[in-house]
Amino acid sequence: MHNLRMAESVCEGHPDKLADLIADKLLDATLEKDPFARTSFEIMVTTGLVIVGGELSTDAFVDIQRVVRGTIKEVGYTEPDLGFDADTCGVIQTLDEQSPEIALGISSEGAGDTAIVVGYATREAPNLMPWHITIAHSITKTVSEYRKIGRLPFLRPDGKCLVVMDYEDGKPKKIEAVYLYVQHDPDVSLKQLRNLLTEEVVLKILPDHLVSPSTRIEINPSGRFVFGGPAADTGLTGRKIISDAYGDIGFSGGSAFSGKDPTKTDRAGSYMARYIAKNIVAAGLADKCLVQIGYAFGVSEPVAFDIETFGTERVDKERLQKVVAEIFPLRPLEIIEFLDLRRPIYSQTAVYGQFGKPNLPWEKTDKVELLKEKLL
Image (cartoon, rainbow, N blue to C red; front, side, top):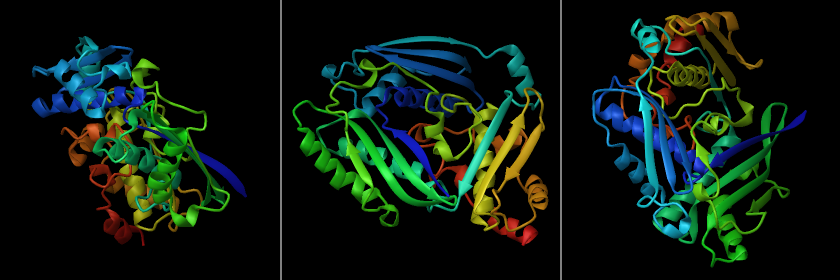
């Protein structure tokens, strides 16, 4: 049976992703000074303006203006003719302390929120992620890197990529299409843009075994893309949660990540769920694994825990779930301590995916041998 799966990735200059990046840069700046700070930064970017809202509970001083403008400059919005730039945009902050009821629930070692969290792993790409989201992120990340180092100097910060993949019997068969949209200077021709992006980026990234003669590569199929970024479209934190996670092949608990400190169960719990799923697949116990955990505000134990392996398991599922619950910490504060999450590590997660990056603690496969020992 054939079916199509899709995944989207956006460049760091995309308005929504710029908002996510600012939120996590602010989180990192706060945690660097106060590892126990409570944050929930919500960012809006629009023409000439950044609004920093949400909650912040800390005694440390964070220079919000400096962090916001530094992030915008790092992304590449440095010229007034882009309609949005680091030096001239306004920055408004409207922050309040965390609700005392929420603070009390966390202090009692309960979950910081009611949340459904999801983790997924599959034996497709080398990072045990779905191929389509891995390819999409690789393309947008490469586009941004080439822009920054001057290899493709005519590019501007905004852009996005959609990868469509054909699956047969649950396994990736071929890439149906790649749609790449990149913002660019007005003096570059569409023909030159399309040729360079196709040859220098897309074809060098696509895995040979997934490319077929019918694979379509479309670069800016709608035409020129000169006007973009926050000047063209308002951006908000938390609007790319499927892109942040696993594409359309994985489930979503519905919560966003960026701007939230690790006491927010929807963030830390999602990382633990991915850690569990990845170790199960890496241990050869299943080819696909979906971990779902439910948390209720103020309750220290998970209220629900389930592992789905889609018929690919090599051990009894009930036994697998029992052993996993024994090996992996599932309480909110235990997760924070086990993964060492009170550190400024989050800005690297804000763009090009929260998962599949080798240097993040929830991507380790250090429980493989223990799982094998207990289950095989």
